Length: 135
Ligand code: ATP
Image (cartoon, rainbow, N blue to C red; front, side):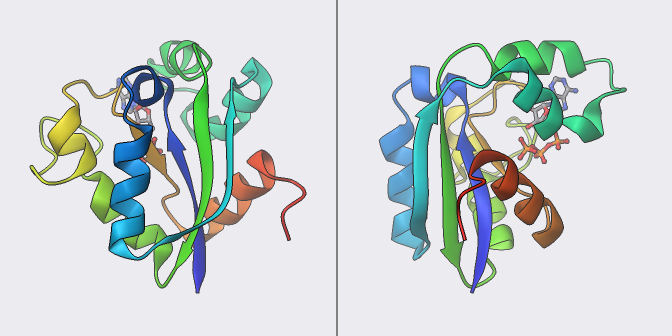
């Protein structure tokens, strides 16, 4: 079984969508391994989004993701990375299919409710960054 890092981003927490997201992933059959509500430091945010450092939206993205508490989750299950990304839908919520989390609850590409690791390698890196004590 695989693990992935899921974030309910600050917009999702502020809008009261934590239960909705957790409910959808649990209903799918994925299981929670770790969970923590926290506000990211700039350092952790910049590390997490390191691959976007040179993009024009990087500064805005870091402001957004550090702008309030988020819920960090480690989620486990068969093909967990792919399974959660299917639940989340496309990065741009307007293009995300209805029935997906972004397709049902968001309109803007930055404030798109959730994050899910995009590969097994990213998942290992991101889980290490958010939950260094987790075996
Ligand atoms: P995530 O990594 O959060 O699961 P993703 O893999 O679907 O999202 P990426 O292309 O890695 O998408 O972008 C990471 C995040 O950066 C997006 O989820 C979104 O919040 C933000 N983002 C991406 N593109 C833009 C953009 N053009 N303008 C503003 N924010 C953006």
